[in-house]
Length: 392
Image (cartoon, rainbow, N blue to C red; front, side):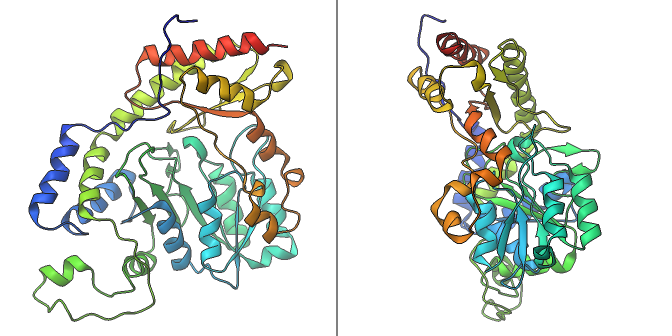
């Protein structure tokens, strides 16, 4: 164990002088809300992931609600997703009045299990399903071939939750471009950031138009168009009671620079993940995280083999924190929360054994581009020290 204690943050965004200049330029331009920077950001992101349409929004959650609404999710139907996700995935459907059916994750990964999805689709409740919402947890892309086959077989939409998965890429294309829609997050801790924000990718022009209108109060003209075109700014129509979900130019400008650096960030994350893998695989009480095709390595999900340790996951995690290692938990399955337990009877850990087991065994380690090898080594040393203390 290293003699000198370090403090290794769970995450620190990589922000440099180019990002600072881009934001200041917007501040000095006199146009702060959604405008030319947001339009340019959409074009550049669309080109990057090869999506016909990319629409920036103020959060992944807003994007999820907009995409679901545009694809017909409403109080008359339901979506299928995983309980092993952040609450916004399922809450977005509830905001639209839809029911949520949950499928367990795979035994050896954090991804939703296609077999569990099909059990729901084959059940009487399956007739109510409008969309499947797979979540690409930690940057690992779900089994999209199987999921897309199910979508075709049962005539349902696929809305990819890509909060963790930029720039994950498979033989079928970038995550977020395989299904009917993909929703990305640019929250502060993500693989690239706009501080707060997100992007929706879609293939259908009618869906793109609906999202464009609904993200700004249901107006048939954008603010940029209203104040830069010859047509009078006050001449517009409201086509539906929309939302307030647009991304301001200040944040879009930050995102444009981060997008240029995305490959750099991706390369550095993979170096750190490889360091963890090569060192942690030597420890018999560690289960390495899955590493699927095109993994973006947004998170490093370390699983403990508790049969070899005389402690709980929480005991292990607290000791890491006491040693200065910033950690997190991804995720607390939704069946642990009061709202979901009270809403759906039978939504219990016993009915989702894989999700519950993964949760009880998993600790999320620091993984960010500007980490040093010394930081990674310190994290590994701390894990070894705690493991030796509690080894059975």
